[in-house]
Image (cartoon, rainbow, N blue to C red; front, side, top):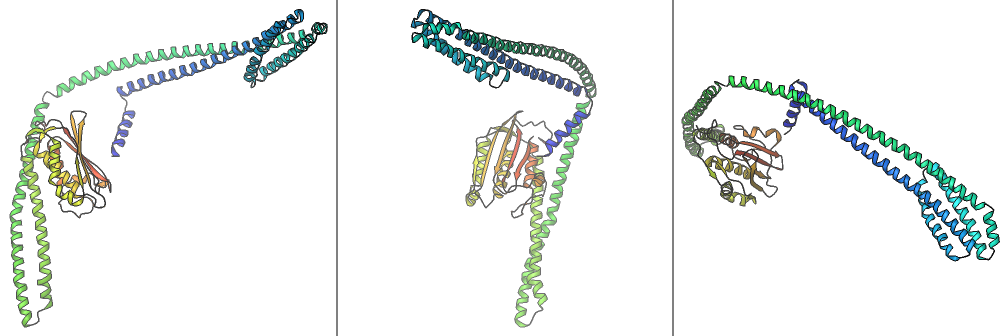
Length: 508
């Protein structure tokens, strides 16, 4: 599992170190992409900056409008005051109060927005102070008029105090307006400069991208020419390649047949002396029984040497038992080799297979074993496949038998058989269990002849998975295992949807 990323990194490192046209084109494309990304980021930043400047300008305009509102409200209030003093009519007092009401929120807005700006805050505080002073002066004259002291009120107006307040208010508002206008002009110039810079950056990037595109097109054209030349060379080299491939394929098939024939002959020839050994072992066992009986009779009449008794009653049976166990093991190995040899010589017969029904039938055949151990086999709906029935039955059967054999007795056994279609016109089948699991170092060795992993407390010679892999490869598939000790194993079988008999090894 860890070799694939390291292999990919190694190939990528070789690609970076080796000069080639593909690397040059890739570098140009990466550079063009980086330029476009840089332009996009720059444009985005400039847009955000322009939006911020525009928001600031809009806010400045609102502050200028608020200062003008204060000034207009003061003028309206002064006009209403003088109208009331001249006419004595109370309807002039309503515009006075409306002007006061309109001025108050404008002053509050100015105070809140200018609180963090010392320069503007000075103007706003002065406006507020002048407004309060002016309204205090007007309230005093209106109070005199209400009491009938019209002359005193008019004399207060003629004193010029109210005029000084209004002149100072106009000057303060003008100064405030000028300060805001200067800031707006400065920020407008900054926004225009940013926009111009953005346009220049976009233009330069566009020119560079066009240059890179021209270079890439030129390199691609040269690359296509090189490919065409290489293709012509390959075509020239492939004139006699098909005949060479067929010849070597025939040699390989003949060599494979010879190996299988040799395995069959060797296994067959080994069986004859093995049968003899097994027969002589039985005769030795019978002879041992006769000797043991004779010793028992002799013991009734006289004392028999203890070494003889031990040799006959313990050593000989033990030796015979070892010989018998070894010959039985050799017999099983020979049978397995013969099975592999016969399987290699069998012609494959493709047919459409209902894998769900096949797997369920195999699961039903081991029901007595799973029932005894409290295990459960679940067969999910699987896609059909066109392949060799006997091979598929042996593959799935061996894997299910293995899963049942190596279940963990400490928890209820669960075996799940599933499958789905895969890209590239393939089908993947899975046999997953929650059994003992397989150590990572044994993931490959379990498929080798006579190799087993983990605790050897189950019968077997280490041939089942080797036979499975041989069968899987013969019908054009692959087999892999994903497993962890103590957590179970998953065997993954990948086959083409249709068996191709033209593949080497498919039909011998």
